[in-house]
Length: 378
Ligand SMILES: Cc1cc2nc3c(=O)[nH]c(=O)nc-3n(C[C@H](O)[C@H](O)[C@H](O)COP(=O)(O)O)c2cc1C
Ligand SMILES: CCCCCCC(=O)C(=O)O
Picture 1 (tube, helix red, strand yellow):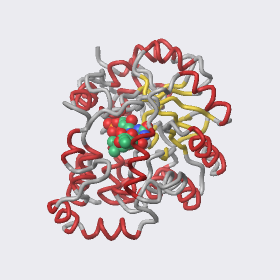
Picture 2 (picture 1 turned 120 degrees about the vertical axis):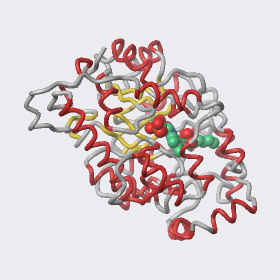
Picture 3 (picture 1 turned 180 degrees about the horizontal axis):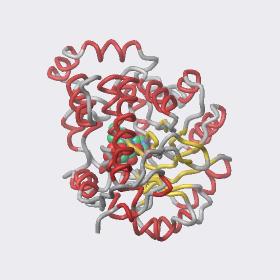
């Protein structure tokens, strides 16, 4: 990893090492991908104010996230199928996050199960929930997260209806998955990836397989899962979740001020301003475009997390300056995982940390708490 200097280097290595279907699943977005592109493009347009001759010798990235100390204002976002980017990918990503002193969020749609991760790491991690029609199963999933001592529940609220990702269909990432000669050849040319995945604990959705009747079979499992996303999910369901989950609750996928105001009234501790990394509502604004108005409206009532398009520490600084208390990354660490397992995820975190600390120094700030819009050029 010596010559890897930025997240784009990890992306290129991921692309070489992981079969195209899984690389594209991580990399691409929904429909025209306008929102996917806008996430990064809008961040990059924001310019900093360079400040000089300020003593920046005592810079620190340390902060708190939901009242807990964190080495930096960064969280690994829930990313489905990490175990297909690298065998046991969820475990390696969680270990890298914990070694760096930041939270890791396990997706409902993980390959490793909640219990697999809990048995493999020392500290609590966060669990992300997709609410499915089978509420008995969802109740049992929340109870499993409680038993595993997960320290926050991230309820994703922007995937009741699934945005189509054209490239997944073209690559046969469908229900059931499609096989082709070119796909088999692609797999055959990635022996290190194949052996890593074969050595992994599981190769299907670990949280779901076997817990619901018939889902031991891969086709049935994927059909059941695809049919389970619940379009009837609404604000009243938050009360039901809160009646089962006693801990910290985060609502992820908010882009609208009115929704942020409703979220602040639910008793949740945080929201994530997010458009699901441009994978859902194509044509939605970039996350950074709506962050300032949401932060103005509810920032004093509820903790604000941000994601969408973060590829550099400079992007983190921009989001912090516009009202986020912390940032989540999805692709940036998924690229690291595909490129080099735990070491690759650690590299992604380290790249962002170094870029953020450098940017702070050149903008004349020493602490995360000092970052606000005075670091931006107007
Ligand atoms: C491959 C992939 C899978 C994802 N799976 C989930 C998921 O299971 N649950 C969820 O809430 N968000 C999921 N997301 C969205 C991320 O949590 C996050 O919102 C998004 O990646 C942020 O944008 P970024 O990738 O530009 O950092 C996924 C994102 C990617 C790239
Ligand atoms: C059947 C689609 C499930 C998608 C789950 C993972 C996810 O959120 C993503 O963005 O991909």
